[in-house]
Image (cartoon, rainbow, N blue to C red; front, side, top):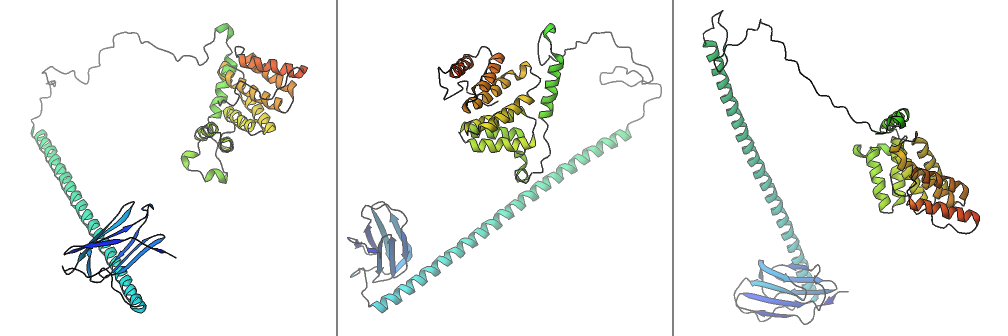
Length: 389
């Protein structure tokens, strides 16, 4: 049941009535105000103020102002004369009829305002359309005028060329500077000898000739080119993606962003979709292995790391860092499964690839101590194997 406003006040002048309704410290949220020529209602839950005015007012010229502390109403009198009071006192039935009449009048006023706004909007749209049509007509007239001008210029040049006298048969044509031009029947003079410098594209793998592994390097480049080719996907889940999102590179970038936000399930889904499009990318398998490692899917992490190592063949300098990460991730999964011997083999392989990595060497020593019973591995590795490719 709503509460009535208390401590409200009103004052008047010869032509205006001022009503003040305090909000009692409540926030001035949504205040519903209904005003007709002989009815006033202010609803601010849970407070309600209802007044049947003694004299009619100009509801169009009247105004209201709402602040955090009060509602201020300015009511213009239809007849400029003093009022004996603000409210009229009527019975319950009369009050009910006055309220219904006032609400119907207010609703009709709202409908009329809505119609006016709609008509104004349509008029504005028509005016904008007419203006655009006029601008387009001016633009078309300007384009037509430019075409006609250009056509007249070309026609004049053509007429001038047609009226130009022909050159004598034996006379050689001259250029703009008056020099005689060479006849088309005479062969051009031979070109002067010269030397053309040629530069070659540098090798992708700059190794010394005695240490060259050309066959392995070419095989690695061929596999990389195959891995960049996107296969056609008939998966219904992939068909729901937009065209730019059916790109393995876009999905890989999406997975990396999810991984950095520690949204490992989102990263796992992104890498899975990318692998459906490009199942020959070692980076996608290695990154998905890192996600499985975070989610404690240790056997799946071992499978993805092994697949990444299979695709990172033949071993060359360009994929050394990626092979080290894949070995470290598979070794971490083995150690968390308490298969320390297998984990030690992977860590030793990673150290052989990057012998200068002190963190890897420390992890190898810790695994050895654990196998010998002098240490306990609970959080390996320190290399941060989750660092994405």
